[in-house]
Image 1: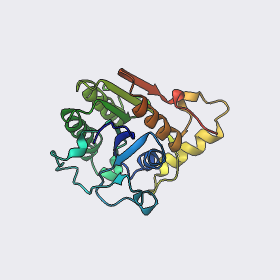
Image 2: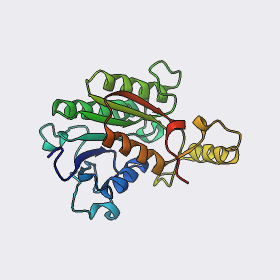
Image 3: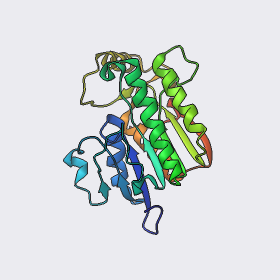
Image 4: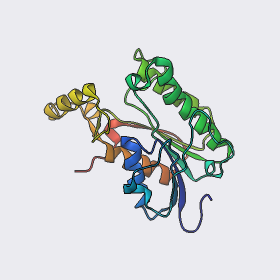
Length: 223
């Protein structure tokens, strides 16, 4: 089910979120991709779920199907993530943003997948004073130790897009970012979810050898 004459097989984790859903839209329209697998807790919206080359298995991320054949693919794009508020506690947040990501990555690597692309965050570091950024940095570190021949870490700033959930703090940040865009350093400017998705997809398709960090100012902005 991996690379074939007709194109690549892509595993998308977190396909129901803001960035993940945009990754799916772009991947399903890309002629270089012949099959997309997007495991989620609940069925994806009909806007993407009608594609014949999309598989959308419903799974429990707390009890992953370790023997699923789709862990072996050409590339994984991971956009799994939550917020501390939505998760309910620090522990629950870490279980998703670090635990789910690492567990999925291990299964994909064990199955022979060579390329992993993570939607991380600007400022991610295991030494960060911010709990959120520290968890992001910890999972980056774990992925780096798994031996993926191609590992890309995309670190966007604040995301600009229509979320299904209300995030007041993020909305305020977006308004400030838009108002001060002319004088704000590019690396701190809000970035469109569609641009982040395009960057993730490009990294998965090109699959450059080694570990690559793509900072927010290097994310390709489309007008």
